[in-house]
Length: 173
Image 1: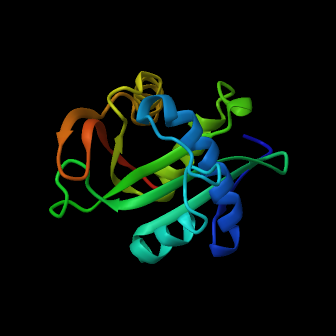
Image 2: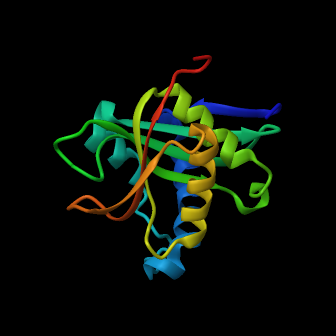
Image 3: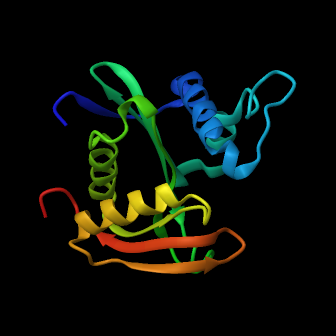
């Protein structure tokens, strides 16, 4: 994507991450049943900071910009949805593209860039009710891996639902 930029987010991006996460939470509210609090927000004011404090080096937030405007974000984490505490893989913990930028190939490009940035075994999980996300990730991961991925139904304390597992290679490999 010619004019797309991936920006490793820092703590100074907290306000942007929170604002985008509010939109993400809104998109998910029909599935999760979440309501806003008495201030009209889905998350508390310091929500992004709490992720950094609790996750430390296992938390890698990214922002996506297109033509200089914020277009989405992703949180890459470390661990496992399938076998928590036993496996150490890359996780696509959160992934969001603003509606205006969907179905343009931007999300696929963003995901593939992140897969290549963190070579190794990946796990991507979706809520069982989120059929659109499942279709998106199967398509993107299928293209990225040439169809070489497995899908399992995770039943762990960390995740319940479909998870695609695959291996990524560094850029240029």
